[in-house]
Every structure is written in structure tokens, then in C-alpha cells.
Length: 329
Image (cartoon, rainbow, N blue to C red; front, top):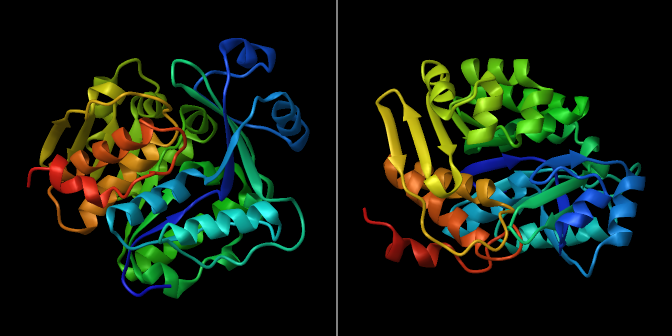
């Protein structure tokens, strides 16, 4: 791994299979619009068989964030498990080609590489149906002290709590990060994910996390309240830095110095897949390069705006080329 990694991202290594569908398709397959639902191999195959022509791209929340950081010009690395199969080779090629260091050894036994059937409706909402596959083969043995200590920030997706072995790997990474004096960042990932692990996430947010990422639905779910303001008020005494996204309303950054509201960049919304991932990429790129929290949020908004203007969750153009024209220092 390249010395001096800025952000080490840890998550589910997934190949996205993206197709445009109508609301009837969601109803037919009993999908909840805008959610991420875990599915078994049979359900995944059933949805795939019924999907219109699709695009296959490497994805996974933290993988998208790592690729985004590299696109901004940052130094990113990634930990996530694939199988030694065709899709595993695709994922490995794509994330390395994006400029991310990726050295996790693929599994040779067990389930195939993970896939997510992403259904994009005309309102640009994405509904994800994720078969975790080889992701659950990630274990503490895949987490190495030297790799953790080399990174300024460890960034983890909440989805990793869906498997005991993945969770154990994260907890080892947290322990090593604390020992090395590194920062820990967590994204809550999805309001349904928060529902599954609320008590554990509250404990993490209040006792271990240095930089928290969440959208409005996720933070309201975490504290089981009806409004964003209520959730922010409950969160603020416990968090060091929180970047809370609010779609077209931009984002709010909470810190010991107060709250900062930052407007979203106007853009045509094509597909919301990856918006939060690329927001985190911009924010963490800015943070590890010494930008103010306000400008970190602006970089996050820039990444999100760019990715939602296209189909798929990884930027098609170098985000570094957009910074000078979009950001006032």
C-alpha cells in the first residue's frame, strides 16, 4: 500500500447491476423504494432475470467513497472481500484502476462475489437489492496493523454490521486505529440498517467515532425522533464532527464550534445512487488536506452533485478538475 494513505475505506465489495425500471416493477417484486434490502441468492437471481438491460459497475458504499477520494486527487486504500471469480476480478480491476490501493486477498471457497441489483425509477430514486455473497468472508485476519496505522482516517460503512465476521473485522480495525492515534469515521449507511443495529450505533457514535456521516432519515432513525432539528440537538453533545446531508437542502456540519449550514450544488438528478458515498469522499478529501469544515462540506456537495447527474455511483470525470471552478477558498 502506498505510504501515507489519507483515508482507508472498509466495506462490502459489491458489483452493482443497474437498470431503469418503473414503479410497477418495484411493486411486482415487493421492493421498498429508496431502500437497501438484503436478499438471498434466489431472490437476487429472480430480480436479475426480470430486469431490463443493465449496466454492471463496481460499487459498494465504501468502495465508491475510496474511488471518489482518488478522483479528487487524494490517497485512498480499501479493505473488502471478493471471491476469486469473474466479478471479483472486475471489482479488483476497477477499484485499482481508479487509483485506490486494494490488497485484500480474495476468497477461494464459499459464496461468489457480492452483487447489488440497483433499480432506478423515473424519479431518480434507487432501490438496492444486495446479495452479500463473499463480503461475509471478511474476517479480522484481513485487517493488518501496518495498513491501519498508515492511514490518517479509517472510514467504515454501517452495513458491515450485517455479518458477525465483518463486524469483528471492524472492531479490530477500530482497536488498531485507537492504538495508533488515528481518526475513525462511520457512515450510518441506511435508515433500515440503523433500525437493525440502533443501540450499537448509538454507542459507537457517542463513544468511538470522530467523524460521523448520516442523512436526514438515518439520523432521525438513530434517535427515533420526527424532525431533523430534534435529532441534531440530541447528537450534538456527543459528536466531535458530524456531516448530516439533507438532499436538495444541502448539509449541516456539527462540531464543538457550532453548526454550519452549506447549500447543495444545483444539478440535474439522474440517479441518486452514490450521493452519500461521494459526499463523504469530498468531505474526507478536504479534511485530510486541511480545508475548513465549511469547504469540506462544499467538496462533499460537489462530489454528490456530480455523481447524481449520471447513472452509477462512481464519478465519470476527475473530480479534481472541478474543484477550482466550484470552490472558493
